[in-house]
Amino acid sequence: MFAITRAMTVAAITAGAVALAATSAAPAPPRTTERVTVSAAGAQGDSYSAGPYLSDDGRWAAFDSNARNLVPGDTNGVEDAFVRDLRTGRVTRVSVASDGAQADRGTDVAAISPNGRFVVLVSTATNLAKWPEPQVDWAQDVYVHDRRTGRTDRVSKTPTGASAYAHGAARISDDGRYVAFTARPSQMESADRPIYPAVYLADRRTGRTERITNRDHPDRGSYHVDISADARYVAYTQFGPRGGPGQLWVRDRRTGTEEQVDVTPGGTPAAYHGLTPSLSANGRIISFEYYGDDLVAGGAVNTNTYVRDLRTNRTRGVVHEGAGGPAVFGPELSRDGRYVGYVFAAPQGQGNAYVRDLRTGKSRLASPAVTGGPVTDNSVHITSFGGGGRLLGLGSTSAQLVKGDTNGEADGFVRRLR
Image 1: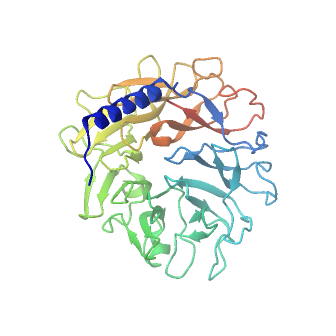
Image 2: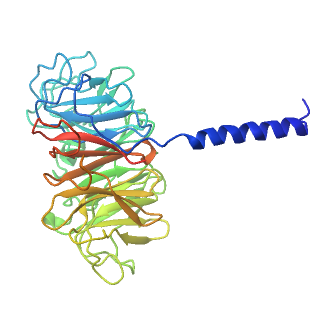
């Protein structure tokens, strides 16, 4: 035990004030756009690349590419998955088996964990994991590559070990334990189940996989999955019979209840269904696309992008100021639920990325050309937020986002927002 004197207290406060002043005086990082689908030496990709998924610590960018010159030894001739270290520029290929062997077929990136350790892959490869039976040539499955250990595990496991026929969307919990994905019940459960995709959640610790979507509607396919940070909440779109109107749901795995997201102001089911859900980390806020005019009071608000607070049951349309639009193309929500990214196209113009601060209601351009203002040659799409909402992943064939973009291919970019 010791006594804290007034002099010590004053000194501590003074030191803290000096440190705060020094910190406050530091200039903010410049708002820049960086192309990440290049080699460690900066060489442009010699083929197309996708927009990146960003880790929440802001250091890692995961993407897939058909380029052959991003890393040495890329000789498999198929699309691969990569991770770029945004601090050092190093590029590593992650679509490899646990022994380092190249994938023998194409692989896409579906997600990256917040700390960048785990990368979720969707692949038609036959050699990323051991198979108890021959793999179907075109069937997709979901894998997790652990960048710390180098191990690649198949997540979409069926009772017989056959392919799950996954449909591309997949998400991972913050701790890497849970992975949500869509696959055929006829593969995941039994042959007498329907082929329409359902949403499943795999527990990588116990090896158990649970079905999330409603078993009472086997004729309704489910897609567009997202999960909260702890995997308690799972969002998905369930289509109606024969592809008809369906619903956007959020399932609470703790209580076993489901809440419909696409509802009218009176709480009744909407006429259409929400798409491409994006959940905040705590599962409270969700953004989504919707192509109807009955979600907000007063009807249409010239937008296809909506945000709903599941605690207050309030839905807002994200309306962009200016002629054009409406705001579409898969809105993406920041993990804290404060920002939503969307794409807006001016009349006879290309789609550009914008970020709306849901607290202030103001939007700003997130895909400026190097000369300033929106890009005008090709549209931009959004892939993810990262770095605690400070970074935004973009994909585009535009040659105006960075200087020296002359490869004529789609590339992935990271925009520093603040």
